[in-house]
Image (cartoon, rainbow, N blue to C red):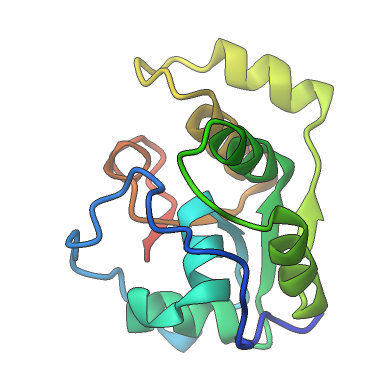
Length: 163
């Protein structure tokens, strides 16, 4: 499956996703030996990739664009964005975002009953339901998560790629 390739977009500003734009943690190095990878994009990474990929570090861009990798976008992220749009926290055309991601090779990951039960049962003090779902989905499907969310980065198993 082809990986995501950046295209110019007008999906919205997507600036207030609750992440410090100044957070520049050292990227995890993904050498060629680590590919292929199933990569689950955290919500902010998907928005940044579609709207302003310069916000992502080189390792994240390399992982997203590597032809051998499969990139995934969760229904949980779509749900999270819909809530933020509805509440007025962000201005974003979610349908356009999903269209851009899928047109460029991303696969959509639905939320199954097994995901819901595991996310609700996850032994993790972090209460954000969307983070809990992404960690659960990545764990159950052996994916890596592309994120800058420190709560996810610090949660074992550490299967994250810093964006």
